[in-house]
Image (cartoon, rainbow, N blue to C red):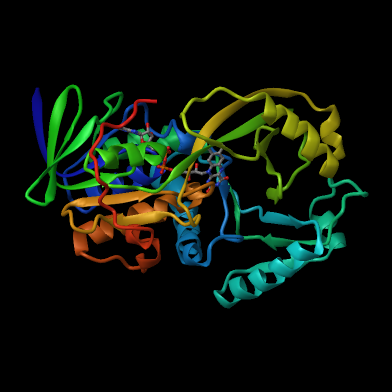
Length: 380
Ligand SMILES: Cc1cc2nc3c(=O)[nH]c(=O)nc-3n(C[C@H](O)[C@H](O)[C@H](O)COP(=O)(O)OP(=O)(O)OC[C@H]3O[C@@H](n4cnc5c(N)ncnc54)[C@H](O)[C@@H]3O)c2cc1C
């Protein structure tokens, strides 16, 4: 067994863990970043690419608004194209109840200085002419500073950026458990080595709860299988990121449409594409975008989203256990937040506090975090 010492060990090289490690290293901390696979190849690299501020839990909005400032500079920081574009996000409203909810939401978001508009059905169709003329619409909400980025390009850019900053990245090395002594976490154990540090960050996405169990900590998150279907490339036809009750759609720069279907609650983390994804796509998308009826789906893939009971992430330090931070439960919208969450966690770890208030993301809002039994993480 090898032994490594560092200031911080970050577990999980998704967008949360990678940005936390990057910002910590920029603050001159020695950091090990460990992943069971490759960098950014789970939810982060498999996501819909929406970089969206509107239509969020109010507690997340300040993070999302700061996050898009970071997104604006990332391609230059990494020296790589990320296909980040601010071409708007449109949320379609199909009935009076949705319209009423949207009126209240838009008023609240505008009070927070978000530039978001409530559109009439005619204005919705002006923005998205591909919407069928007989689609039931009561309106839409449009935020033009929202946009999209290419998740795979981000995943590819993170590795060199981490290297340049001096983060020690060990991939294909799953953490099996954490070790606790005298009220603090002291090491993370893999099959190859023991990683000792002052501070640990559990950013293992849908696997974070399993790792918490190795410390006897209860993390009340569940997983959903979220699936994307990719069509053949088309000339430009869809602008921005458009979501509706049963899915969302964006058009990548290379012309392919990305169709996101409803997430399925799951117990086992396995990545086969389900037949129900195709059924959903066939049932819901042509109703709104009739042209899709004649378009070929050429591939699809699955990722996992991690859900807290109230749909808000958990970004916290474990109460009663020193040196253990956690960032997970980002549901279907952590891609936008990741760069900001990494910055805030690095501030908290280095300065003892963060520049934005994270108290609404506390772990203890659900329960006592200590559970009765310690167990090993599952390997699915
Ligand atoms: C289909 C889909 C569409 C989505 N669309 C959007 C969108 O449009 N906009 C948006 O903002 N968000 C979207 N999301 C959500 C977003 O992708 C996630 O919220 C975000 O990527 C979570 O990042 P993460 O770093 O917490 O998790 P992950 O990216 O899953 O990273 C966790 C990492 O931990 C590693 N790991 C796990 N266990 C261990 C272990 N024992 N040891 C070492 N490493 C371990 C994993 O290998 C993984 O790399 C979508 C997600 C999916 C699946």
